[in-house]
Length: 50
Image 1 (cartoon, rainbow, N blue to C red):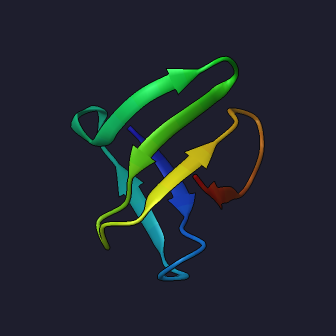
Image 2 (cartoon, rainbow, N blue to C red):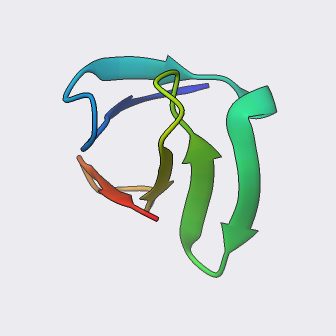
């Protein structure tokens, strides 16, 4: 699990392993609770729309 700030719904969300869609190199691509696909680089504080 990890906490991320979604760029679409602008909320801090707890993301579970079941929401992870794939790992692309150093990015973790996941689906936020709002339905938006986001990408997160471990070690960074924010997400980006995927």
